[in-house]
Length: 462
Image (cartoon, rainbow, N blue to C red):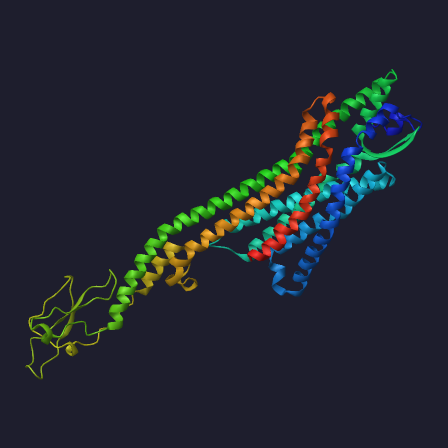
């Protein structure tokens, strides 16, 4: 059933003086709301233009910038903020200053579409940034830039598509409503027009047709469904995703730090073992004492430096005479030490070739750290990795706190007001609207904070 505003009120409908007086009662909060919009436009307009121009300049003049995921997300967030500033904020200032809508029906529908679209896109891009950081945190050891960039592009497409689809109902819900006596034009949703019609009919004790009553029932159902869908998709579900994403990021960083503490001890022991064996090999053969120093039979053995290397000892040959005899031979034994039967000079030992034990060391280190040996400097790994992870966690906590505080501070009043209006009795809705309507303007302040959080602050961290 389709009932137009003309059928509800007619072009010659009169506006009750009491209703007009209630409109005048809004002026105090309206002035405050207009002032907030003006300040936001003066400050946020140039700031967002600068941030957008700077991001585009980086994208055009730097070849690697097109692969910067955060830069691509920032540009899309800038677009949403620019729409908020120069479409929503600017038209709100003009609209609230005149208190009537003089743009006609088509402009009424288009403006309402872009109002909602900018808010949806803003919220969805912030969610995309959180999800991108979550993905990066969980794939540090196997991170692939191409895959991450592809994920970001998919999220951006989904964000734009969802914002367009969820904003389309505005085109059908809002329309130009005209009252002739006195002349008054307003861009209003269909349920507001219906409620006004019922109020006027009740005020003048005019009966309402069954068709209008049935239309009102269907309008009430669609109003309830749309408001809940709008409320959940524009704020509460994105807010939940953002909170869970940053909790997951911090949890993963903490897990990496804790896991690294155990790996660090193992790698430190591994390095000590490697250092000891390297020292033995650098000293090289002969690995013995000068018998003249002690006058005792010497214990001569050589160790390759790993648990897998068997001790090597010198055992003199049974053949040959004293001066010109054979120098002896190298034998391996399972015993830790082997005493020689006679004193021997160190220079009598033949060269001992170092055992190739580094492949085992490399494999063990790779397994402990998860990083290929060629890509890691284990001399500094234990010293720097823990502090780097702790510093990353601290910066992430600071950034997460800023994002969550800004998001909830500027978005909660608007959405909480909507929630209160939805669950409040009809008699209390007017009081809620009068006292808290100006808080809707706080959502525009978020468009000022976004370039600071994701632009200036981000570049300083980088």
